[in-house]
Image (cartoon, helix red, strand yellow):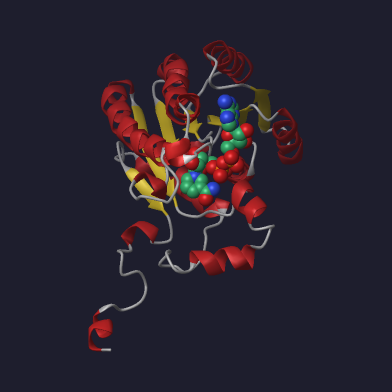
Length: 262
Ligand SMILES: NC(=O)c1ccc[n+]([C@@H]2O[C@H](COP(=O)([O-])OP(=O)(O)OC[C@H]3O[C@@H](n4cnc5c(N)ncnc54)[C@H](O)[C@@H]3O)[C@@H](O)[C@H]2O)c1
């Protein structure tokens, strides 16, 4: 996409599969990508794999000084920042049994650090005359899921934060949107399913209209669209990239009315 050419993109938490797909998509659009992640081994390996357009800076986004240093380094070495993708997350969640410390950790990574990353890149985006911010939320933002309290709450808050950011940053030429993926082939799903994509799709079939889990590249393409000039009138919006998960009601895929007659 022409409007993404030579753009400087920062992706927090970009060291795993969804981050990789995002980085690949931005590079294919001739952008320069910097991944900020605590996972130094995975981040370095990914940058090595994807070539000179992708850099990695080991950063714990829960530390303001590390965020500041990383963004300063990107500005100094690349010349600016145009796009921030708040992708990093923690799946730490023990529902009712979660401790206060767990709550604060999960919210710190999933929500507060996205606000702090935004605050940190804001002057850099203004120096470029504007930019785009993408916040990652989830289907979990709107439904109850057994045993999960922290993650869904953090993702619901992220949707509201997106609206607040969009309103206050518009005057700086910054658009802010969120994406809410459904089940996506990712590190955790790969681990839990033992790398079994067919089984993952089989389980996902019941609650995704499209009958399968999504691919990271499918999420990445929506992010690219939202970052491009094609989405120049889109801000404060949440985009479902969930194969119809959120469109499906409790009746799911099976016609319910016939059950009255049976
Ligand atoms: N995987 C899915 O099916 C799915 C579905 C809906 C939404 N999402 C969202 O997509 C995004 C990516 O999810 P994923 O499954 O790829 O997650 P993941 O756990 O594979 O990756 C998250 C990354 O964040 C990094 N991270 C964690 N704490 C950090 C910190 N303090 N500082 C810097 N980096 C930190 C991790 O090291 C990791 O690389 C998340 O925001 C998640 O909520 C994922």
